[in-house]
Length: 243
Image 1 (cartoon, one colour):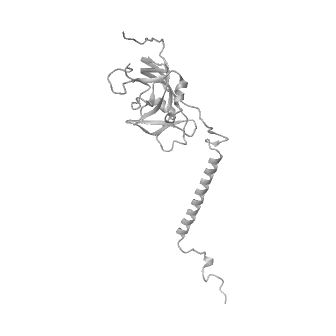
Image 2 (tube, one colour):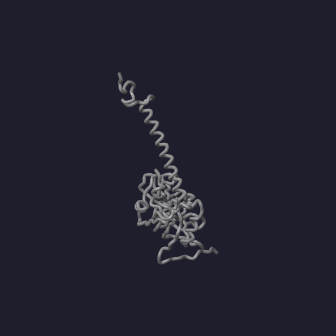
Image 3 (spheres, one colour):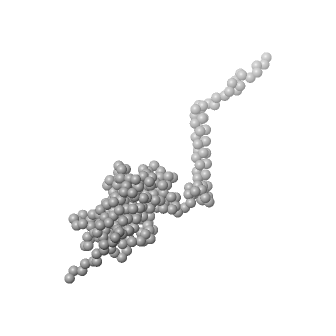
């Protein structure tokens, strides 16, 4: 006798939570996400259908395979995954489970999904993220982007959080998580800098100023030539002539 799992026919699609890395296409025209474990090499869109990560021809999710999209039931469970070092830069996604699915104790494995919302973490400096900047790695055709503030962007390719949502389409809502440090010029100073950091910045500026003044003095001497030019009053014979 072959046992079958009980079938569910919910009146509304279930909701789940997962973590993923935001990605941007190489030409900058599309945005999506990529997983952090199984299937990480296959980016997906806001509305997408799963495929077997092992290249098998069966439809996902298959009972004898672990393919398909994965999510957990509770938001807190997904947030706990962000505590590990390798997942600190991932975004928290809220998804709608579509199509066939297999229910587990902590979540679902399913065929199709719609990403309804994404929460990007703060910038690495602790300030609220306003941009998604090139993280320096990715997969063929896709660049992984990470949360950044305007000060930490540097010269990296970046786009705003709102622009990422527009490129992703399908009504995706992207929000930035609350910053972990003050960025409004409170006791830590502008941009979240404390007194030691400000003192170090001031010392660096003073050193640069001293170097600039030394270079300016050297340049002035070189322009005037090896011999110092004297004024007309200092020329020989220019004094009073006496009989």
